[in-house]
Every structure is written in C-alpha cells, then in structure tokens.
Length: 493
Ligand code: ADP
Ligand code: MG
Ligand code: ZN
Image 1: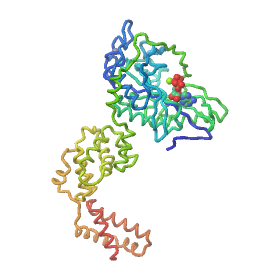
Image 2: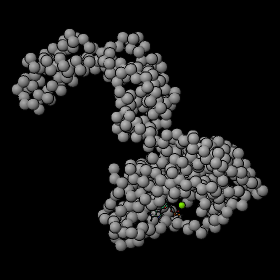
Image 3: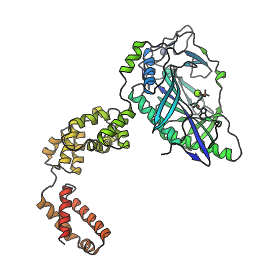
Image 4: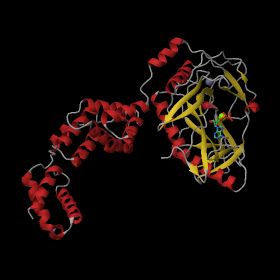
C-alpha cells in the first residue's frame, strides 16, 4: 500500500468530492418520502417540483445529521450557515436552480486520518439532490442518440451532504482508502446508508499530476461515474497515467470533466469545466440561515457512537488481533458488538478465536445466504459455546465447522447439536495409535524415505504421514494427540 505514489518522476495529486444522501425519512425542504426504489414520480409535491408559490421548510433531521458529520470529522460548525441558489438548467432539476450552500457551509475545515496520514477536508455542505433521467432507445442509455428521455423526480430534493477534501491525497490507493474510511464512519454515525451501487454515495475525483518537488499544482481533471471503491482506485490510477503520458509527450492538460468507463477501464472527456461564477450563486431568499441551537449541538455530541478507527484500535489492543481482522469486524455493522457479546461469555479460548470463527465460516455463511447479522440463528452465546468445545478438544475444528453450519441453519444450540449427533473428537490414544499403524503399513515407501532422508526430507514425510492420519480419521482426530503419537512412533522406527 503506497500513500505517496510517484510515476515517471511525477506525483499524483487528488482531491475528492463525495456526495452522500442523508438517511432522513423525508426530503430536505418538504415532507415527501426520501425513499429509494419507489414507483417513479410518486414521492413528489409542489415544493420539490418547484411549482410557483411553494415554499421550502428545512428538515431539522438533516441539520442534525450534518452536525454528527461535523463531530465525526473534527469540523468547525459555525453559529450560522446559509443556503444559496446555484443556477443552471437541466431537465432533472425542476426549479432551474439547486438549493445548496456556497461560502457559508454548515461544516468547514475537518480532517480524516487514513492509515496514519491526515487528509484535510475543506468543507461539508447541505444541498438537495436532483431527479434522475433515463435515456431510452439508441446507444445503451446515453443521452446522445436516445429516442427520448424519462424523468423521475422522486430523488429531487433528497438531502445530500457534499464532503470536499483538500488536494492532500497522493495515490490511487490512498484515494480508495479515504473513501473506505469516510464510508465506514458515515455508516457508523447513522447518517447515510452509503451504497455506492445505488448512488446514495457518489465520488468525484479531481486528479492532477506534477513533477516531484514542484510547488504549484498541475491542471486537474474531474473524474465522475465510479460506482465502487475499486473503480475509484482504478479510475484515479488510469487518469494519472493518462495525464503523465500527455505531459511527457509535450501536450497540455485541459481542465475538464471526464467520465470513468468501467468496461474499458478508461476515462472519457465529457465537458469542459464550469467556473463558479457561471452559476450566479445568490442567497436563497425563501430560507432563513441555519443556526443550530446549543441544545441540539450537545444532544448530537452526547449521542456520538465510537468511530470505526477508534473501535479498531481498541480491539487490536484488547484482543491481539490483526489490523485486517479488526477492519473486517468493524466494517460489518453490528459485528463488533456481536463479537464483544461472545467474548464476554467466553468459556474457553481467546477473543482471537472468536474473531477467527466470525471472519471465516460465519461471515461466509451470512454472505452466501444473504442473511442479516441480526437474523442469524447462531447468537453470541452459542458461538462462545462452540469455540469453547473446539478449544477444549471435545470436538475437532472440522467438526466445529459442521456444528456451526448446522447451528446457523437450524438455530439449535451447538452443545445440543453435538449431543444429538453424538459428535466427538477422537481423543482416544489407543484408537489413534491404531490409525497410525494402518497409515504406516500403507506407506512403507514414505517411511523408508523418512528413515534415510535429511532433515528436510524427514519434515516433508512427517507432514505427509500426519495428513494421511488426519484423512483416515476424517478430520476428527485430536491433532495434538495425533502429533504426539506420530512423533513417538517415528522415533521408535
Ligand atoms: P470547484 O469549485 O471547481 O469544484 P474546488 O476548488 O472547490 O473547485 O475544488 C474541488 C476539488 O478539487 C477539491 O476536492 C479540491 O481538493 C480538488 N482540487 C483542486 N485543485 C486540484 C488539483 N490541482 N489537483 C487535484 N485536485 C484538486
Ligand atoms: Mg465542485
Ligand atoms: Zn416534495
């Protein structure tokens, strides 16, 4: 993982603009439902359609969510912020202006730590989303060549928070990690469902390159249309290389908006970039300034959950697990709490054992079957019970996997499953010695090679014999005991 990437003597400079839809029940300025996937044009009213005479009323919950974001990313949240009209025409925006914030946003000067590097966040401001156009007929949903276009205004007026970073990011990997960390945090504080595939989180990447050591930034291009974190990484990497190609062959970079195409793995020119003055921003006359009360601020502060970064650090320390495992556990909503509940009633084994079982078979099952964590049949106490049996040696690892699968499907308690199915690890020395004798008899060649071989050969053949013995017990042999017996028998050869 590189935080600072240099290619052919050029360094990559990235600033990210992230739009996230706030998970309020209603839209930003009217009472229409904020809901993804409704029948087109059913969540609309005179306000979000911009009909003459209709007046907006600010959604208090959206302000509260913005304050949470303010807390989570160390923003300054000034006493007052102001809505502006951003004027432009597009059919998906019925008012012909977007109500947004301009020079007095609700959050300014925040930070986000990404793998030990602090990325500055310029601002986060509230604005309304536009509707959605669908271009029908012609060439694959593009506006050019389409027969006609359909417009759904359900999304018009849905609250967005636009989070704009400083151009502090220095590699494609770091850009992807910034988005990952931002997303995990927004999810943890409950302000958005941050689904990039559904468009509730959208990332635009401003990319430029400059010679290492240069003090001025290069001309940037804004890349749009990435709908996964993986495509953010790919798009930034591609765009930087494209710009270096141009510069090193003597051409100049034009500031423009470019469209990422997932299929060909390239960015394509869309349009030259508008300047702010083209939008004729002016203060929204129909809305009063946003002035969150002291009560609201302190309520938000008192309700802040532990943030993912802090939670990861705490679990790594307390449970001696890896950064990677901590990330997996913390990224799945509710899984860290589940793990903590299991650890609290642990009867044998370590927290790390709990984490291993969770990140392995358990998550695998949830993903495969599309089961939500809350609906899972195996509860934390059951998992602790299962881990206790495996660590205590009464059932083998493999048997534990079967028992877990059974418990997840049936909802029976692991101890009950073990009792009902008569599962037990073979921990009987006589039985295991018998197994080893059969294995020895069937592998005389391997034994010869062991006897005459050097240390390396001995190790290899020993591993082979152990594998054969485990196979012969169908994985139910107690591995410690089997290992011990095997050593004794090899010594006696
Ligand atoms: P605009 O108003 O045109 O969107 P901003 O100045 O607000 O422009 O910047 C938008 C985004 O572009 C920010 O995330 C910022 O960090 C980033 N940015 C600005 N200059 C550069 C640059 N030279 N290279 C990469 N990113 C940049
Ligand atoms: Mg912008
Ligand atoms: Zn409405």
